[in-house]
Length: 114
Image 1: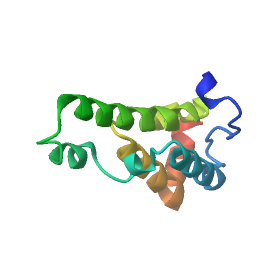
Image 2: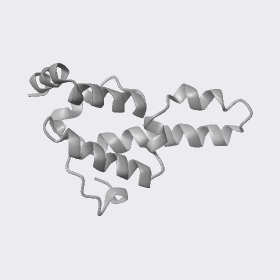
Image 3: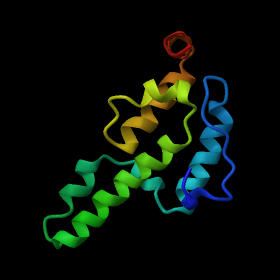
Image 4: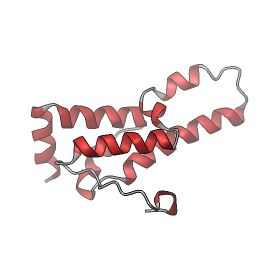
């Protein structure tokens, strides 16, 4: 864990901690001004970038990457498989929600990462 998260005490996501982890992670992302990145697709940001200069486009792409990286920093190693294939914070957040709030998917996820 980097100094960036020093003092942040969020238990890593496991198959049994999603409910509390989600609330704590949402609060952290909001505090870092990254929450919106879990709610919109990168393409939605890029559509509005037509008139923006390249520097601003790079800053938005950096924020999107930072949001995804922040979430991934708080995963238990047993949950790393879940992250595979998620290219954006929104995709990842939706995957987690689907896996941990849908009982049949949750059971599949537990079997897959156990």
